[in-house]
Image 1 (cartoon, rainbow, N blue to C red):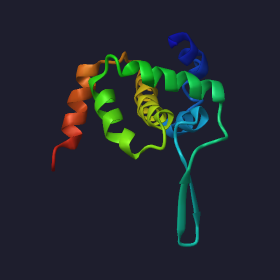
Image 2 (image 1 turned 45 degrees about the vertical axis):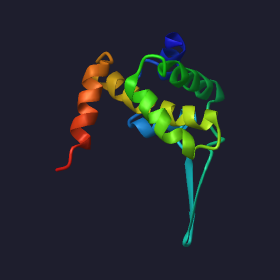
Image 3 (image 1 turned 90 degrees about the vertical axis):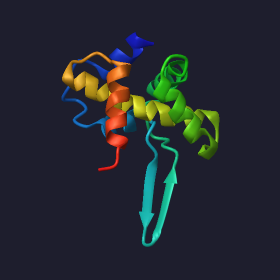
Length: 124
C-alpha cells in the first residue's frame, strides 16, 4: 500500500500545491454546488478511482493502529451514508496529514500529531 501511495504522489512536491488538490484527485473530498440560496454537497465522481481505492484501504487499515483515526471514524460514521463514505472521510484527513509530511520531508509521528490536535482544540 505504501508503494501505491508513493507512486500516486510522485516525487514532484510542486505537483500538489495544497492538500485540497490531492484530496480532490483521490476523490475523498466532497463537491459543493451552490446556486442562488441553495447549497448541495455531493459525492465526488470525477477522480482517480485507483487512488480513491488505495486511500480508502489505507484509512481502513489505519483504524487498527491509530487512536485519532478510530476516534474520528466513530464520530463521523453515524452521519455517513455508508461505511465507504466514512472511510473516505478518514482518508481525507490522512491525505492532509500525508501532504504536510511530504512537503516538509518528515516521517509521521502519532504522538506529535495527537499533541498538535490537543493544542488546536484548546480554547483561546
